[in-house]
Image (cartoon, rainbow, N blue to C red):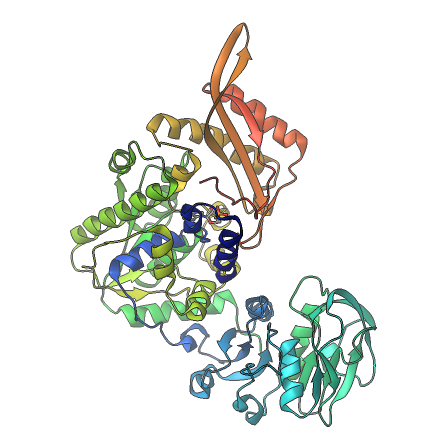
Length: 570
Ligand code: XMP
């Protein structure tokens, strides 16, 4: 997310768009809802529970990634966790006292934009060498090891970026067990190793990098390439070798273990207290509420605010899943009219966001008060949000607050935060959801923005336009699901533009709405590509919309990527 905001800042400097352009939020799913609540509570300064809480307590083990600022650092942590080993990202100045309770079995030093010669170039803390635990340096991390252990790093004469062919050679190492003799790897570096530190051996080389992989007999390794990216097909094998063969991990990081452990922890933390959560239908709030409900039953009450900007059947489906199937305590508030009347005459996208944010808090607080004494607020904060707010030095709430212009919110609620997912990645949250018995439809839901359809209706939001958009969006969703494309797409939806155009139906001329269809692929919403949907799927979508939604007589497909466009139209 950090990168996304940086990009916005750069974009503004170049093209000087209106200040409004800066207020987009790269959040997905329902994070926005929880962030509104965070703002309302003014929780600034409340620190997360100790990280060790996340690891199943049986046989605690972790791999620690020292983050030197690479865009791939989080990806390394994800890859290690995919090997069923708990992994956390920490900055290079993290003291040993914070790391020791995690019971580290090894360290990975990430890549980074720096150069080891620069003044103030970040270095690895001395405890990683003193601990005598295995170390794997990746790219800049490898250069740090080389520099700190007495080798020589030189500025590369040419930057090596892209695919390279790695050949195993020199000394055999368990790091490359089950890796073919020659394999493709992804390079992205300027500086390179000129001389290895004493007692290191070459393990593999490429045409341009004689020291593409090095290691010593103390289990310290360096890789010039990136094993964590998909362009290094054997990368996962290499990381798996590191964590199992070299660090001796057991592999106890499974979502089943996580759930068992979390249930006990939640019971202990909450005691006889009461918890509230905001359900939005998004996967994070769904999983967090279900997990807590499993732990403490009716001590949790979920508040589901219908702001009227939801899609067709969304309210019923969410309500049925939680109330009827899981037997959860839900307060459902239909506040649609209240939101709609506040949005009357409003056309500016950021004003819409601001009004929805404020009103959401008002409704939530009113309902929370009716419940009586409450002790905890459950939030679906995930690990990337934790990392982002830690590295940016500000809370996610502060960022969204400024980006959304949400100001002057009440700060009467004095609740403790309950965030059992704060060390999980999104794919792990989905896994937890499935293991808790949530329907696939909910667990695999595409992200939906907090302000909902309000930012997919260009111009003023009215009940009539909402109904038109719901009908058109229903067709898009239905056809995309029928074509089995739903999960491959980051988002797919309809936009109701404020353009009218002339058409002909039977003997009549029509003057109807123009609906745009947007479908994108993306990994994280920072960048996105328009999806190359098959023509016949597009044809069915278009035919059905004009046939089933009488107010619409023209459908267009948005074929712009992000950047320069954004995913949403407002
Ligand atoms: P853009 O349109 O900026 O969207 O490319 C990036 C991602 O963020 C979502 N989005 C929002 N989510 N509140 C949210 O909770 C918002 O105001 C908002 N605006 C955009 C968007 O759906 C996409 O996933």
